[in-house]
Image (tube, rainbow, N blue to C red; front, top):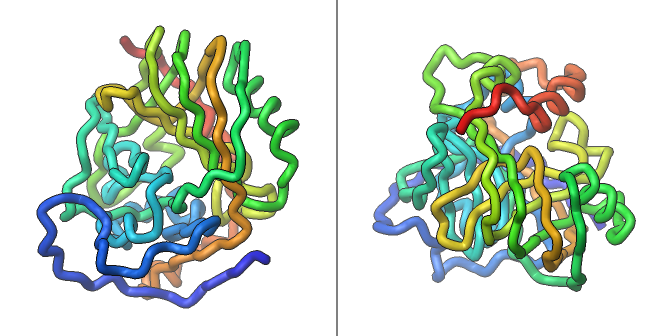
Length: 270
């Protein structure tokens, strides 16, 4: 059963942590639950100020994707740790004083796994997973571990107010293609009905095993990898209660812009 929790929240916390790790004294997150911070249309119109501190985000899970305050690169949560891929491509652990304006996270609780072979493109991978995972109206968290013959990644540089819409920022994204890298694709598949709230379909990030290369995935190729998945029928949505958020027109149809931003190849760089 999908649980919609739309009660606004206000993150007012004093962070006395020295590392960006979840609070072990808090109640463990519910398995098979997606927790989402804000909605994709808010990010599309340029609402990049942080809403949830990273330590609080990690109390909701150990696997996910998003971005950081000021749209400062790509945020990836893997094995309970938060990583930032900056606009210059460098990967760093996220310090506890950072926050996120948009993120999707879950406590990864594996429901099954299977091998995946001879994938020539990201589009082919998505199609294969659509066939293998028929739960089209639930969220699905997907982890793919393997050796990637080729993987094309992107990130964006930190933004400062007044913020531009995401479609404008994406025009100056940085992009890299790497070959023969061993690592993990971190994916969230959202159902089609979330348009305006999340990214319908697949949202992929990547990290190498040594945590030196990562980013938002635009394309990939691999001969063999293993897919692990977790079906998430419960959905917890955290919204911004501020007057500015409530003054935004978030009901506009931005599906075309979201698709363009998620798949844009832009100008490739070394």
